[in-house]
Image 1: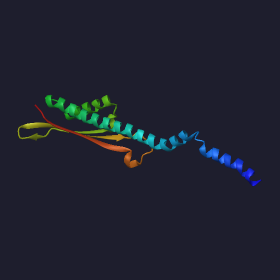
Image 2: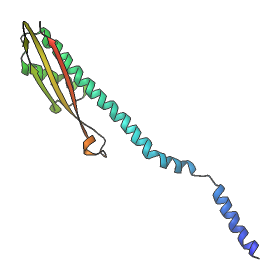
Image 3: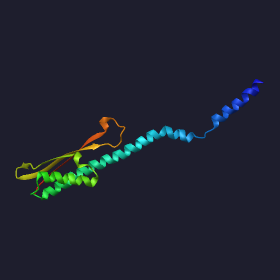
Length: 143
């Protein structure tokens, strides 16, 4: 009699262990967090490089403009750099630009140093990773 009592339970356990329905959902739930984190990291890295390249381009572009315009002032150069940032959807309020016109011998240079406070959009990062200071520099001889 004890054989007959255990047999349905054994069949049920065997059937339960062999059933693979829903295993894909369980496997996805285990991998999804890592995959989504990786995806956000790739997107945020792309945004960071876009901002850095955009800021460097703005500084270099305005330095070339100031290289040929001998009448341009420091304030005008700063305003031009901040205007260029809107091309890359960057907030000009996060940019700090320092413009100097150093002279070395008979050569006059334009030197633009800038920094941009880049804020990460992913909310769950630690404070040390939530903001980056991007720098850009250009130094050209004025004509």
